[in-house]
Image (cartoon, rainbow, N blue to C red; front, side, top):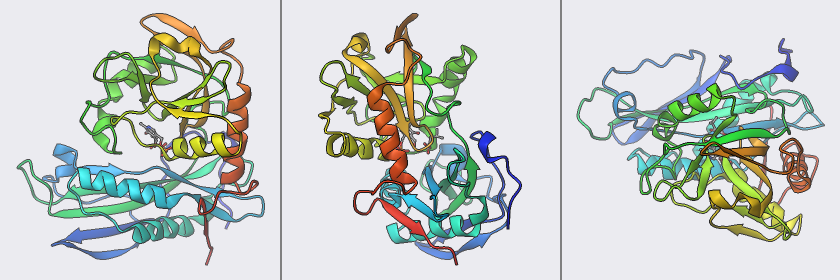
Length: 342
Ligand code: PLP
Ligand code: COI
């Protein structure tokens, strides 16, 4: 079947596709799973996900290769992070194999919606686990729904590989020993207001500082941060318990070192020492690799280069990562998982 979609002009927006995978949990076990067509969830008004944010989610993509095949990028890593998030939220863990199976089934069922190779679009995959059932006290749910839905998307930040401008915030997205290190809705709820203020001022997104001292870059509302050190070309990315352990970040740490021969470091990135970096970028599944043109902090704008161009190393990393994800460049072992059409 061909679907009538203008692939090249897709934004990052919800689309109600024909199928989603769902699994249901009660009395200590998963009791029903399969594809469903209804995009609405029918849940109790007492659901802890609604009141107390007992939920976790993931973000992944399926890629169409030059030969027309469809493949996933490191889905086992998302499965493992989903388990860590579930544990932190006192929810049952979805076994890694079941998670990957659910993702493959959701992609396969909507295979016609995986955008063509070189369209600039991909199929975004959103696994979600929510605590449901009749509750009012602050305690974990006894029932859960795991759902995986998908939709074709274009770039999260407009313009693809084009520099974007960011601003710091006086707000924190997560507390020092809070939930910043897991992928749960509460972190994003607290980022809505600073995110809206940043957008109102025409910034692409917010750069959050470490919640303890507000002196070091933590991460971006939607992605992790990296800088390329002036002179050494070292790839530097913040290390903190309150940032999301980004799969794109770990992949780029590996590729920067093994394929580009760069030194890499996970360490402090002081907001008052941005001159240290000749390039900077945002990295994540939705953000892909987005060059950071400038960061505005306390009213002062710091440009990386002229603030308008894409740095040489950022460009190399971008082509290496996307080459692997779209099947044009050989991947490190285990990174690419094919979705076999029936
Ligand atoms: N940081 C935040 C706050 C995110 O929402 C994301 C997106 O998932 C990332 C970082 C990047 O993580 P990943 O590379 O695993 O998509
Ligand atoms: C992702 O990159 O998958 C995310 O979940 C980020 C989100 C802000 C869209």
